[in-house]
Length: 105
Image (cartoon, rainbow, N blue to C red):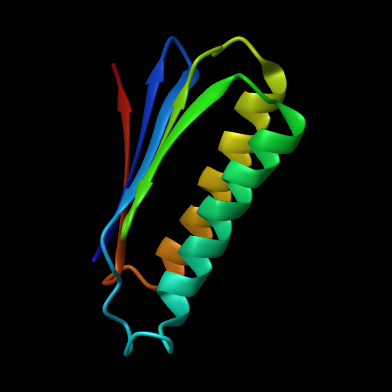
């Protein structure tokens, strides 16, 4: 199961956390894991290219955490909200393999 958590404070995204493996198929054949990986890695790359210095990333096998350093930056917010919408799309199609949680902190 992949678990995705987004935290917000006063309507601004503060963190995006993705962890786990979908278990939809064998490693190398898992479309759900591949989709989530593409979205999260693409999000990190977009932030790096379009909003450098506004975030920190922590990664390891089956884990990615993006922490926003400048929540007022509109590019950062747009990129992270776009990622959330994309992840929701996958979760709607594969609800038994990916769970999303949004939390106000």
